[in-house]
Length: 61
Image 1: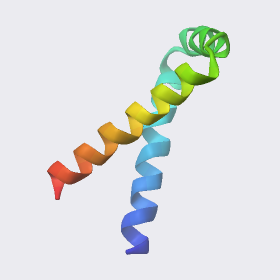
Image 2 (image 1 turned 60 degrees about the vertical axis):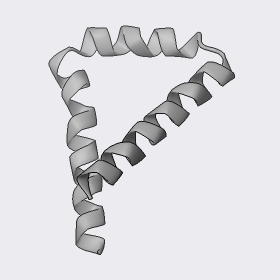
Image 3 (image 1 turned 120 degrees about the vertical axis):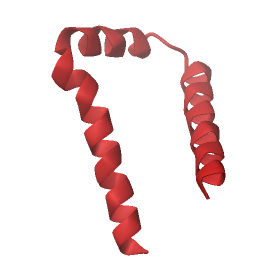
């Protein structure tokens, strides 16, 4: 169980590191735009991300 969890965390870190590694300027510009969003918009993005992740997990299993 813990092995799978740690592998998932490691894979998440690798995937999140690809964009800032390949194009740091675009990554920086993206975060500047994210700062301007309202709290509700950020929460919606987070909720959508969680739902998509749950759907993918459901389909894989």
